[in-house]
Image 1 (spheres, rainbow, N blue to C red):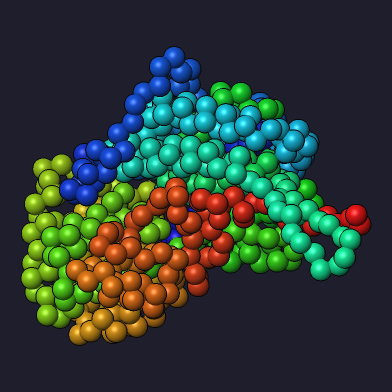
Image 2: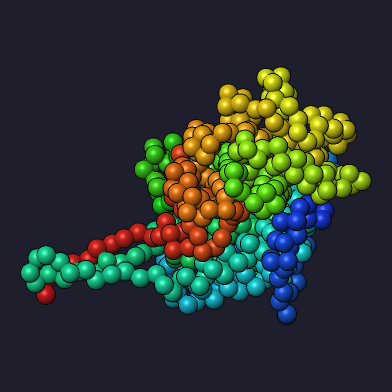
Length: 511
């Protein structure tokens, strides 16, 4: 399913120049993340604004509700938590025009000034961490471990990392072949960038989709998911409070939009890429994943078990890099599977409700994957095919399947839920072949005590990232992030992320 950004006729749009917008941690890995990502509250920051009953668009620095709204249903209560403005094609055009008008001034703003604005926005986000995490909990069902100790702090660290790279943008002075001729190669902002972002990690994807473009001197339109409009509204309000200056095809086709970046499902990504191609617009795509963890014969079982469980079930598995597939060597498979079951039993508190998925449709889709696998010969290692009461249909306790084969739908399609499948292999080569048989290529993990072997395997795995002895969920501001094959193209983060939003211009002259 990818990142969960469906095509919706009335998705919210949060807008403002230069950025415009038309439970307790589950496993030990999550507890470690909680310690690592604890942040300090900023003193004297502006108080967090309470979310309005209707989440507005922000166009040209002004909040607007527009002509129509739709309700956002909380997966926790199955009741309306707020409504959100529904953008029209006319709103989209106004957003592009506002961003285009803001571009000349923003692109000429000194790098240090852009840096200071982004750093101030990060400070404001940090001061409002608990409130921002609560927005995620309310509208998408995120638990404390995923929201307060992982996603929101990661977005803050990404924003600071991007801000710190702004002053490093530079061109070059090459030596030319022609006698008496000199040249300069400039790196320049592109113009208006459209960022289309998903619901499941709003403070990460909002920062990644907008801040890299802003840092490079572009103006940005941030088009949020209809499932998490309040989180994106809160993010844009942080930019607004940092004193920043003042329907999708419509925006893609607008001549002022110079580039599109999209994070979401592969199915929607294909549609956006098709529209970009028809309009000759470059696009950056970070799409779905079907991520494999390979547990070699010499793996440290304790390390592998902790990382696989955290990678599979953090944020209810609703992360593009989540571990969907576990490939374990036959010589250690019995011990590894027993350890997995024991760890699941030890870390799940059956006296409290299971984690939530984003909506009932997502739960029904995953139940269908499980039923199809069981009917084709798979079996349940842990969990149950039907354990959620009908009145609480968005909750899903972790399920681990065994006895799967390469032809099963559950082995090929992204689950995006608390579901993983385990397959036993007889060699590292077989594990690599099966991992590479996926149409996706976003993230992977290899568990081995032999680093040289791990590095050799990593080179053979078709994936945007391979993590040796750590989980597939790994998003580091200093590392480029993106995939291959059906997981997209281009990279966010680090210097590669900045380069995505710059154009190169050559200027020559005769001496």
